[in-house]
Length: 465
Image 1: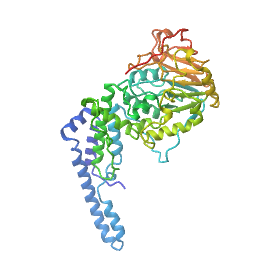
Image 2: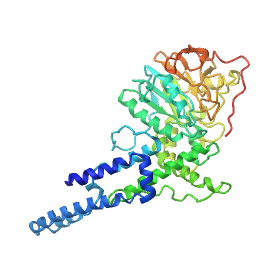
Image 3: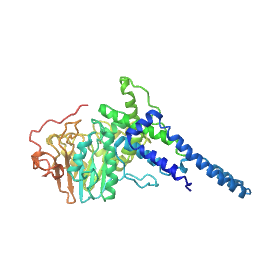
Image 4: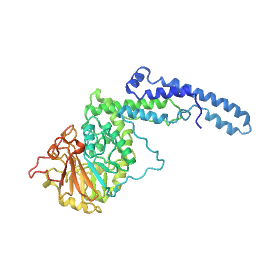
């Protein structure tokens, strides 16, 4: 039972707590007093609670001498714990840290106490399906793509109704707003569910690389963003450690070297922060990446970042999803599963995504699709299409990575739309296909796919870090 606490002390606690929502104030507080100003407040709460409890226990002691066990139980309850403080302290600390990193308050989510459910690999055809390509750390371009499909409003809230959205992976690397995108997509997921829609995210090769600690395509701003995350995550843990009764938190930096060969000292802490966040069972990996699928089937469309071969289908699409999740959750060791590594991996394959349609292995693709019941097409990212979203092999291969991030080719946002009748169209911000005075939300639609591929199109774009 929650003990009564004086209104003045309660108001004082909440006043200081909510002041912490303002990052400038928090930095000043932490920098000068190292968050210790909270300690007297918590101590006063604890002492007040302890005194009240002791008085009650003294009275009960005389009434329950015949039952020593009951007396011992009351004594143990008199210890000051966070359960005796306002019940949402831990949740508040998490929200405070999230806001400090992302600038967002995530909508509340019902706590599911049931064991972890298997990831869903197959979905029925929705009335409206939208697919979005690689985002690579560019938050503004990500929002432009979402607005293009009418999925968010002017306040960046979900406005897609019952639409099902698939993001094909590669949120990480090449840009400096990777965490902000992860938080933003999580916010939209929660908002979409309330409206009867859903946002499904996939793992791309860059998610796999980062969980493995391969940071070849990380930018300076990307390192700094994770440095900021580590700072506020640490502050949140310090705030929680002031209370007895909360689960003891593990040091996210445990086992990570203090320095790295060939890495300038000035980047060492940022590298450590990124490893801590994204390694298997790391806080960010576990929270934002573990529940991504790696292969997805929605109606007659197969979604995968790189591509699927017969051996992947034979191995089992559900099995791939579950094993990748277990690996990200730290249950399968450090190296990624074999089907996520190498040129023929599900997140690396380019056999069907070469921008020159004639280089697509149509025979192989047709064979693979035939082994997945009801599948008509494979939708992929990974390989930048300078001409925009296009199709090959009679639209059995749909390539949707337009390199929209400024860290890639700063391409114009485009998204793929599929209706219940399996009709495809591209929503584009390309001025060649829209009226000059129209905004992203009112963009014209270019009907059909593959129409923009020249007979002798440009070479495949390879973006270097």
